[in-house]
Image 1: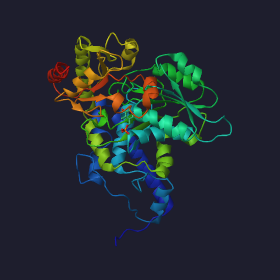
Image 2: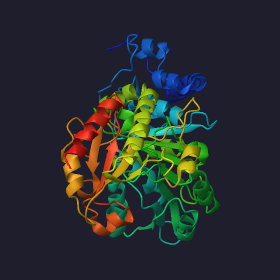
Image 3: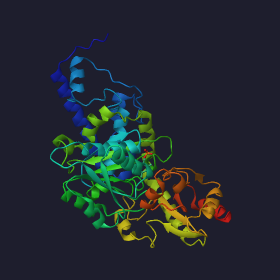
Image 4: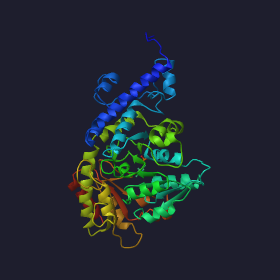
Length: 461
Ligand SMILES: *Cc1c(COP(=O)(O)O)cnc(C)c1O
C-alpha cells in the first residue's frame, strides 16, 4: 500500500489540463527547430526523461499493455478522455505517442499548420483507418463512392477493388491518368466521399497535381487523402499543398533499416468533409485514435514505434543519399542500349518532370531530389516476352530480389509476377504494369557498387 490520499474527479481533470499544457509546450518548442532537429528530438525532453524514465536520453519502450491509476477519480477522468491517458495499448501508449507527435511535426513542417498523427500496425491499416470514416451510411447523400488514382500500390488496389467494391459494394472510380485534371473532375458527384492519390505512385512513379486536386476536392466539400510513402516528408509534405490527410507506409523509407512494418496517418486540423461529426473534422487523427481505431483494433506494438522513430531521426540524410543515387542510376539506365524505357521523375524525359520539380525538394535545402524509386523496362525481342527481363533480374548479385522498397539496401522487384500478380492482366493494364518492368528502390550503398551490380544483370542477357 502507498500512503497516497485518493483525490476526486475534478482534481484529475485539472491535473489533465496541466499535462495537456506541458505536451503543447513541448510541441511549441519543437516547432522552432529545423526538420532534422525535430526528427532527432521530437517531443522527448529532459523533464520527460527524468519524470518517466530515470533520465534515459532515448525514448523508453513501454511494453506494458495497460496503465495503472492512482485512484478511481483518475480512472474516471482518464477513461472519459478528460485527461491525457494511454490506459491500454490498443488505444494509446507513451512510446507510440513519441512517434506520433514527431510525425505530426514533420508532416506539417514549414506549413504553419497544426496536425496530428496516428500510428497503425501497417500501411494498409493506415489507409483503411483514413478512409473508413467517410464511407459510412448518411441518408443526406446518395450511396458512397470514392475517386482514386489507378496508379496505386498493389495492396491499395486490392483493398479498394476487392474489399471495398466487390465485397462491400462501395464503388471505387479509377483515374487512369492522374496527371490529367479533367479525369479526376469528371468522376466526382454527389455520392463521392473523398479523393485519393499516391505521390509518387508505387511502382510506376506517376504523380499528380496535389494542389489542383485538393482545390477540386474542397470545391465538392470532400477531403483529399494522399499516400506519400514514396516521397516521405523529407521531400514532399502534401498538407502544405492542401491535402487533408496523409498516409505513409512507414514500413518503407521512414523505417528504412527494415526492422518493422507500420503505418502513419496524419491529418491537418479542420479537414474538409461533408460527412462526419464536427469533432471528427476538427482533429481527424485524434478522433480516429479515440474511437474507430480503438474499436477496430489496428493497434501497433510500441517496440515497432521506437524502431521507426529511431530510423526517422536520420530520414533526411538517407533520403538525400538514396535520391542522389536514384538520379545517377536513372541516367545510367537511360543510356543503356539494353533498356527500353526508364521512369523517374528526375529525368528530363519524364512527362511530368516540371510538376515533380514543384512538389519534390529536399527539406531545408534548395536541392530538387526526386525520390528513391525508379521503374525500368528491359528491351525484349517480342511483345510480352520476359526472357531478357528475367535474365537481367536473375543476374543481379548484391541487389536483393524482393517485394520491398525504401530500404537502406537496394532492392529490385518484378512487379507483374509479384506485387501486381493477383490483380490480373486487366488490373495491371489499368495500373500500367508491364511484364518487362523492374522496380528498383535505391539504398544507401555507394552508387558505383550499385551500377557494377546492374552491369552483372545486363551481362547476363
Ligand atoms: C507498401 C505500401 C503500402 C502498404 O504498406 P504496408 O506497410 O506494407 O501495409 C501502401 N502504400 C504504398 C505506396 C506502399 O509502398
